[in-house]
Length: 151
Image 1 (cartoon, one colour):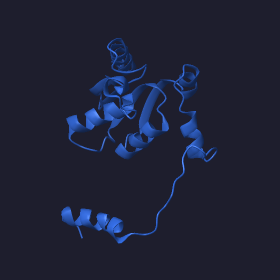
Image 2 (cartoon, rainbow, N blue to C red):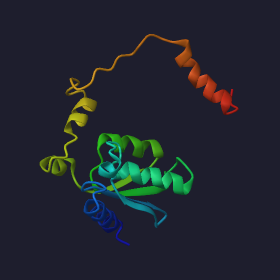
Image 3 (cartoon, helix red, strand yellow):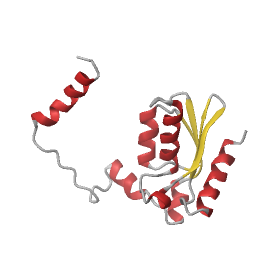
Image 4 (spheres, rainbow, N blue to C red):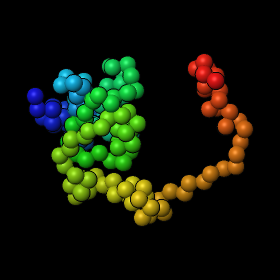
């Protein structure tokens, strides 16, 4: 089966129906398609609704797990840093992609500012401020474990 073609078809459907832009993704588990979807940024007015993230959200719901380590993702474009982060969080080890972030940049879909920030090349776009230690914030980790029955 052509998993990339499924991502392309989902992308075209999304663009034609004003759901999202020119990005799509398919998640496959053990040779079975879990989801093929376009991004939903336009429909949802959600800057985080990239195709890879929407696909991961749907796959996690469908499979009832956060662990997608036995899945692969096929994306019509190289995933941005946000998407790469979520891909890593879910344990996916293999991503196939077609267009590069440089191709996207040429067409007005640039994530270079994110790549520059994360590499330390340009930190002018965001000021990160670590506030003093607070017991109420620190307690949240312990409280979570209490609620989970862990000590």
